[in-house]
Length: 495
Image (cartoon, rainbow, N blue to C red; front, top):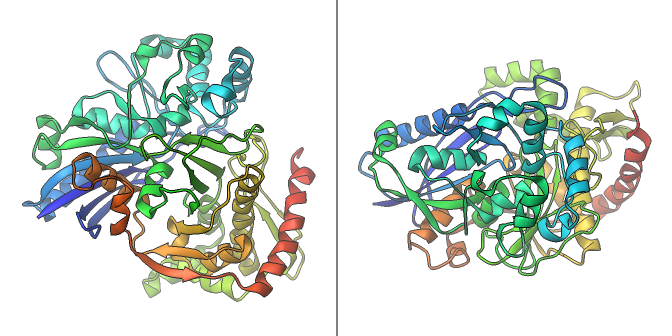
């Protein structure tokens, strides 16, 4: 039987998934690894951990399905991470990843040096993007920078290890802040202004193009046949769009993963002049998407779980349940508004709509009557309000969604899905699978291998599992709460 593989190099772990050509999930393997925070605001990972996770995942799948005819492999993963290799292809330092906030000074340098930055890259200089990380290494670790011969993004390091090719795709490259978004190619002007050698960068492809083939050495390691085509793929959100069927105007999705994203597809390139949301090339050839990002979405709930919910985690083990399910049950008993408690999810600074790497998270409105259950619900509501901030900016840009899909780990929670529907005042769909980005990568792989005529034609294999509609009374209450929420950033930003 014919199959496709999608590999998603995430922040908490790498998901490797096997799909049949009808879109059914056959098997998935997730291998976790650590995140390192050597200083406040810093975030790093080891590229070798990603690769080991990929090999482990592929070996498990190949052992379980030894006769599977793998037609193609698609890659996706966390965007913006800086991977630097020497002339032997060896990693020079740990990867500075997407949520790292150390590059505020370098962002100022980029803004000063590149006169047409927003016109070319469609975004202002942002600490999370790759360009500022390159400058930080040059400014602070020059000996390492001098040895650098290749700059790659996380998923593209995996591509290099699997195929030997130095390549990326336009959607992921959009987040490096070195791409001419309109022309979908590296910007000579930006590279010249920043004095970055274009030869350090990989070749840029559309997401459905084949970039290389599985080498014999990599095939031996993972238990697959050599020569399997590896398709360009996309950044995690661009691939998730394909995996959720968001590839036409008016279609949108919200992801509650480690970070939170609201993503809308658009045929025409539209840019927010204030830089509150990102405009990137879509995984659909020749088209675009706009997305707002809140840095600490699922991260906020995981942080709260790990630090304050030990008894819930112990109970969940005894009951053989997901601890988030127990947290859901507790939060569901709390009234809307969390008994006056507000949460601002700025654990890693913030992007949309504030572009503030220094702002800190906060609980506000605490009284003696508040319980742990109130705090759990407040986290969920605060993240939901932060995601609504993204939707609000889209409206100001004249971009509107009439079709919203919820994906990511948060989509497993019926409570959170209903909350998003009420806060957004939009119907929300969920999917029959939770492999959005990996599934999207597999669809891109299938398109590149000729299984599907196009990514839009492949949308027929995507199946919905649930539908949530806004409750009128809840919508009114949330509108008042959101109005107050939007005033709180100004009150805490200088702390």
